[in-house]
Image 1 (cartoon, rainbow, N blue to C red):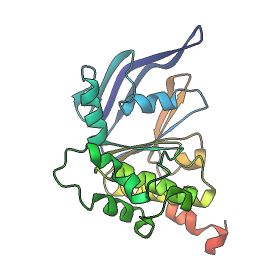
Image 2: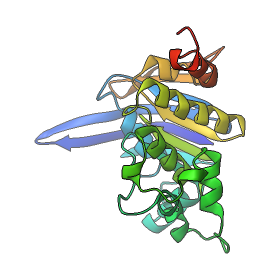
Image 3: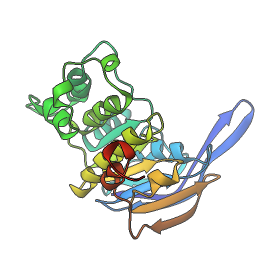
Length: 242
């Protein structure tokens, strides 16, 4: 699904050039759950922006789902982002004066679907928040707000979910609840690429890719990923011993 070949990206900061990605080559197959790890400033988020078509590489090739992206117009990139990619960020980016359901339905405004009725409600149901559809973000916990953000990412039924530090603003319990949702989505066939600096979060993925100084330093399969739902059951408030 994702094919990066010798991708480079450099930013200018004040009078300095900062090379965020240096000859990065990476392939992610459909149905994988990949955690991208690395220290702050390593290039993780830049990689996510390139994969999500939010930024263009300076050089190299990026193919998404078999199609080249180098020559696409901004309108074409926007259409692909809307139809093929779901984004989840550390900060939830919910509109404060709209309900959970209205936030989830926003991507449908730009959808090419002929019938969009019911999609928002079904997306909220998938993350267990159908009973919070008419609540505003200020009436929801952090974990619930992130679930709304995930539902918004799912509303157009994308095959690829990109999550940038999705548990960074959450406590342990809420973080595990979010990771359990990602694991379930992956079991349903979604491709998930998750950026994190947390080794415990990365241990939930099936593959870990580390970036240091803009380069991939290692890329390995995880033989026995942790099960977020089981980890959640071990929390003391759920009667567990953790």
